[in-house]
Image (cartoon, rainbow, N blue to C red):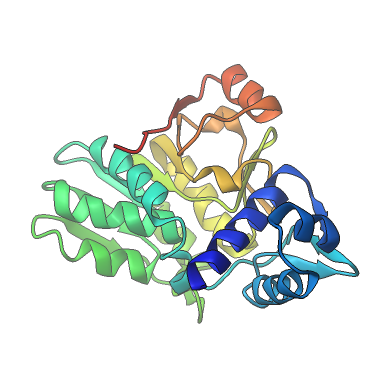
Length: 256
């Protein structure tokens, strides 16, 4: 029963990537379940911040995401492939700036297990803890104001500290990707990521395809500022056209 519920809810979220609003009656018919079952699913997804319930259906959220602890165990297989690809591009003795979020946390785990003599700079406590498993890594943890639930630092102190460093790579997650660029639901986090983009020679975005064409509050970067997108499926439509127009390399490792 739990597996069926997870499958239904994943399908609901996938459908919301394709269209901004859904009606509960259409979802019940599509998934061949009762209206009451769909209502319970929408209540649960709304509570977790993954959509907004509306009269008769649901719409995409603009400002909220599930807590990071929940996101770390969502879509794990795809995010793990993305993370492994991101870690593989880091060479020994390079410097990498690493943002916050669930996909980035997976990347930090792979960097810890597979990279040697790398200096990692991060504002995220979860990421820093994962990096501690790498015995040859040097970890620089940024100060600043602490986000109480997401466990990352932000604000003038964190941005000023970032300005002291240069990096070979920035590895950054995102809440949404569209033809205009890379976005985050949190304007505080977006400010940190914008500085990481400025301080790094090359910038990689790590985000699974559920982030395609999803609106979010704050712009992190235009595609002209990004070198690489690592994801789990080929982008299509206006997003694909924008990536091509800005010479952004797209890598989407397939499941083995």
